[in-house]
Figure 1 (tube, rainbow, N blue to C red):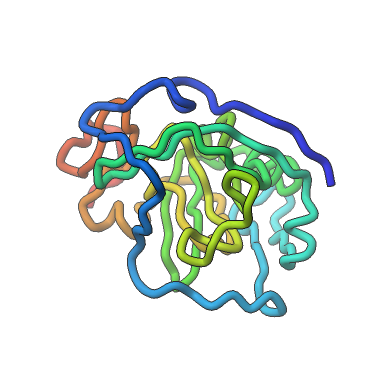
Figure 2: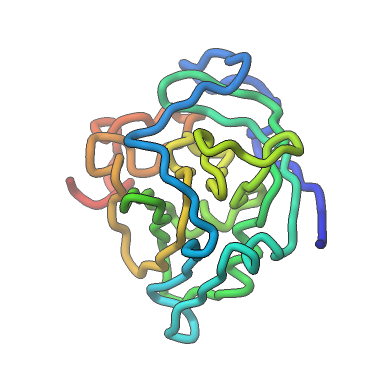
Length: 210
């Protein structure tokens, strides 16, 4: 299995706390709804929507976890105001997925889909940024079910809700569309360094109308 080490770009790896955040020792469990049961024989990861070749790309669990593995040292900033600094995440870079299943040229955003129909939208540039990872491990250990096993998305430069637990696929989109929390009052972009927590803080162009 291939392996490389990256460090997340910008202020995202141990460079301090964004505004309004507090340092967290340990890793609290935060999520909406129940913890899904993992059934490896039924699990698949799908890339669909506006792909370059017009078709869906699908990996089963064995195939997905065999993709090139990388380690990223990056912070996690929760919108509930705790930050966990300098964690080591292991998994498959988003850039690897983009290379294996390229988006069509007109794609501007992605929707990351997780269990129970949960979703989170990202600009394509944010999804393709250095350090963005489909994490299977933290600090060398497999993720626990409560923390997103078998796969959670880690987007170090945005608030943690932008990186869902229990990810099952990515939809390529040619226009922005709000995800689960973005439809319920959270900021469409979610940059912690700009403290973009809630939709009422959005500027023109930050997202589609609610």
